[in-house]
Image 1 (cartoon, rainbow, N blue to C red):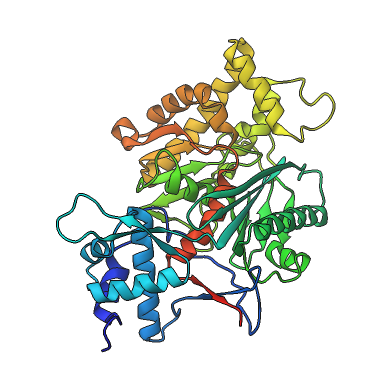
Image 2 (cartoon, one colour):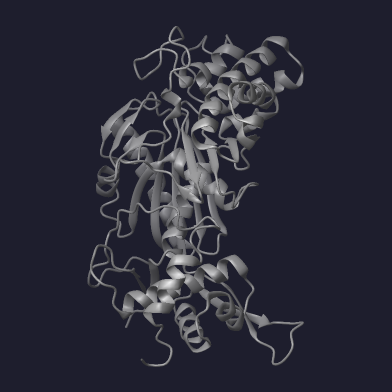
Length: 460
């Protein structure tokens, strides 16, 4: 075997044991790829961007697959441990030094890793440090909420390139209007990214609802969508843009973002509750996203807590969403909010609630306490079924967590059979509203770290 070509045994050890998503990567396995065809130029200013990846299915791996696996191993190690040297990588991964040197050279050529300075405080010859590069590339995430659209773009080093929020009353819009608004925002964000001389690797759209593997939104009660082929409609609206385009549940993506970079990053068993028109649970179990048989896991918003409760948009009564969703909280805390019609922008009303809570206004505090109890009831079900280490109140709940957490925690403890709620802790999400957009952008980073590596080469 030529020097620098990793053996199958080395690759198998790495794929099985190291860099398996504990730093927040490799958790998402859904992707809807647009292959780069002959001559397709998907980046900017004279560079062609293609993607390579390991094989899928039952065919045996060839040496190209083995090398790609090991490239991903090295890339994940650098991301998690930078600055680090080639010798550090070899010692940590078990790959031999010649193999590591060859892999690092490849990653440098792809502009995924770069050299920076020399190591210090070590015995022997100084070594060159390595850090993540990735400046030629970018990933885009768009979060669709009932009251706004959020766009986030990051480079492969995690540097945020843009963060935009646009008010949009999705509940009042038709599906056609919603698709057009998302496509317009995606087009403008793509233009901004390319103006920065970055090639866009992927767009992931976060939606509060049930999304199947084809990117069809089967049900999004907070938006009024049923069986909307959002991924296909967006590709058509964007005229087959030449990069990966994926649609995913917002709670899953928010959980990915919190697991990757929030206060509880790296927690093995974590749940994130979205706080918007709908309530979803993104579940991370043993560092992996729990998707379920068809990708519909986590729909706790439509768990019935009170059969005699208020009507829910799903057609039943007493669902958690109808009792404790943000519209329900606004109606309870601000009875006058709907005097001029349905509330289409939640943010100003949430600020009013927070201001009144800070002033100690009794009816506002009562509304927050009641909402917290419903949330604690729901979390007790999650605690009993999943035994998470932490459940994060995200979205608009994070803004109001100071007043929601006391009653929610008390209800959780009271309703959970295991001592101390099985060790489950309730806390405020770090990323708040927009967490799903951050997680959406991060899915492309996860795909790259899992082996879908970009290759940048100068056009001839």
